[in-house]
Length: 114
Image 1 (cartoon, one colour):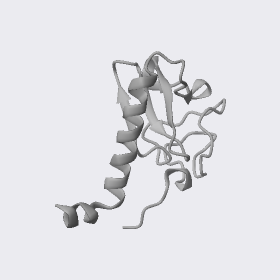
Image 2 (tube, rainbow, N blue to C red):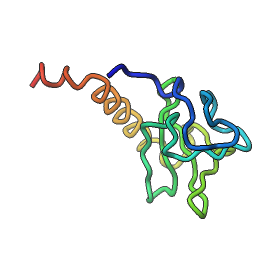
Image 3 (cartoon, rainbow, N blue to C red):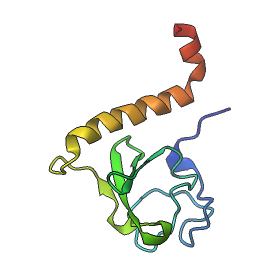
Image 4 (cartoon, rainbow, N blue to C red):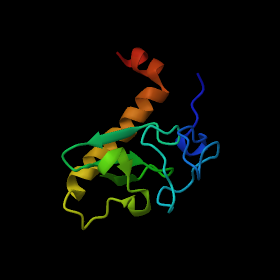
């Protein structure tokens, strides 16, 4: 199976703004993408921070807050900046998400090194 970067996936979650299109930005007003949209395949949902964490096309960590009713606050999605209370933890999470993606992209590499 060939790997396709998330920013090249087409939205499949019926968002009126993105459905059937590539999603190149994450904080557009009017976006109603689900966190399970094909454009967002590797996402960490964290109850402790009441948000979802994901990597953008540059492999930088972003967050999007969860709203009541299962919606996501896409217009206010942003990078986890260094002044954020959870910045130190976000560096570890970002590194681990990158490692997870590499493992998923190249599972055969693990067999060769084991």
